[in-house]
Length: 438
Figure 1 (cartoon, rainbow, N blue to C red):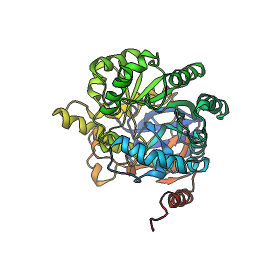
Figure 2: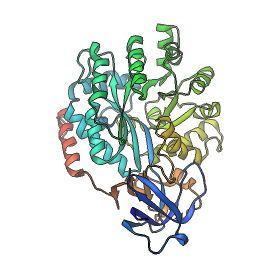
Figure 3: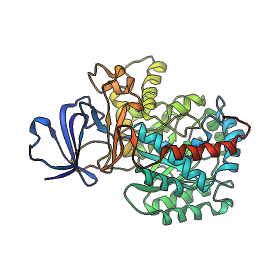
Figure 4: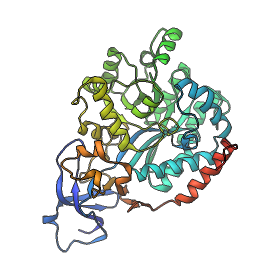
């Protein structure tokens, strides 16, 4: 059998949740999928391939899955740092969005985010924003797999000036998004404090009818929880439960402040949970009880959030932060093992997003693969994949393949003019803060 791409001389980590690696192996890709995995000693001498990539001892592993992002917010990276969430949102981000978000902005700024993600090993992103069809276009052009969610909010929003039209606009977004396996539609209600019960139920009903994922920020800060209790007599998570919104197709983002009963509820209803440790730390929102949620059987993935609150989209750094912060606050170095953190960023993240063909490297799975250069001082010596969590950086990823297509090779993006994209975003920055001289 001939292959489209053959990767040779690789250290193969087929399941990031395991420590075992195949020290010297090969992997063949046919079309979009993995067709063969084996040991170099067993590689047929007459095997043919359209393209042979010599990994030269590099680590071949599943691509990383960023479970929550607002890609277009690259424009607001560093605009308003060192502020609490509500001050950051109400006094800086919401006004900036009202003034500067447009179709052009979402396209170019999402394209920049996609470039940053591919360069640091992300092969799938779950994104949520306004004009999301433009983000989807950017993702598709660069070759990034995405679950692209149209934002819904009960205020005048970019592209939806009349909040009464927000569900209709969401339905049009789903209907008009080009259909392919690389980019899937979804819906994203901003939060229980920006969406009424009527809006939340209507959005969830639409998501259920169309068999797509429903995302929502929930229980991000203690102040949010307390305010919601005063206004509704329930916590945000209890409120979602009362509205019948919690099921296996709902993804709750942040979940920094759930009670023990709510953790059990998230697990029992099958909700996915995405934790964003660096954004939560930077905004001083708190530390999500990830160990308790995992122990309860909840399904968890990891996200960067938007880079306006992070301020980067490097998933390897996010994994490192996740593993270390919980060791520190729990005074327990074993509480989140490295392989658990890696699994959350690969196979578990895929399960949260409902993507059953990515997250591991097995025959028949989608060929979403990254190759890391281990010939680095900070990765020498290499004993186990645990080192990826505590020492690897996004810049160590040298090659990315998504759906069987090369999208980055030897650190060069193949489907984007990166200089053009950065220049377009820089020009938009001048409108956001024209007084800043460069």
